[in-house]
Image 1 (cartoon, rainbow, N blue to C red):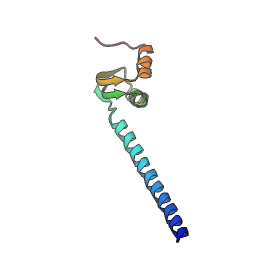
Image 2 (image 1 turned 120 degrees about the vertical axis):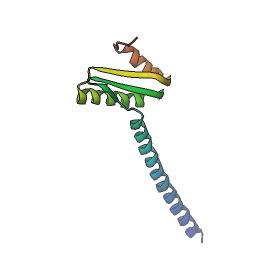
Image 3 (image 1 turned 135 degrees about the horizontal axis):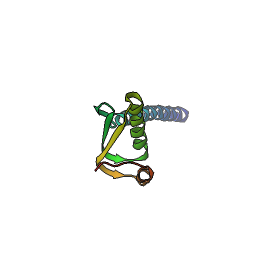
Image 4 (image 1 turned 60 degrees about the vertical axis):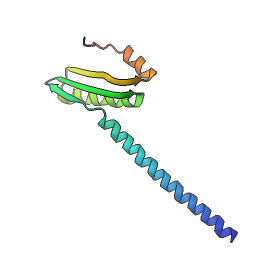
Length: 108
């Protein structure tokens, strides 16, 4: 009886671990999809795009934003890219340092 109980416990653990792994993969995929959706590049005029941002800028999201902007620049031959951070509530320290080191020409 003890052997059957031990075997059922191990089977239960394997089942739970497989279920949790599947859930984690779904959650990671959904997080990536939301991240991609939250970085829309809007074309205003020929050669001008804007990226309105809201929420928090961490290093992962900033990387996605920069990739989106660079793709838009290449695809549409963008001359001006406006990154609107008025809706950003928090910026992580490393991201802020990176943004400050860049030679941006801010709009007044």
